[in-house]
Amino acid sequence: MSDQTNHEQEAEQVLEELEKTLKGILRQERLICHYAQYVNPDEPETMAELQACIEKIKAFNEEHKEARKAYELEEAARNCE
Image (cartoon, rainbow, N blue to C red):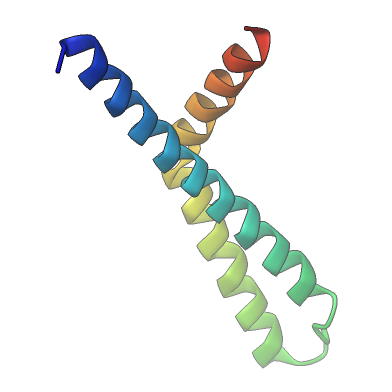
């Protein structure tokens, strides 16, 4: 196999991983929005659960911020072709 083919395969794998990461971020965001609709603000336990979910999503988003940017740039480049 040529180096170009290897690089193309590697790029495809990276894109697939980025897509999975982005889908994970979006899934977490949808879950928190859905969950927040049913939280009773007068119940400290559920508010604590909601806050824990929010913190988890923030950490996930921060951890994958660069991957998300790279994915969005790659998508924009693909759409321009």
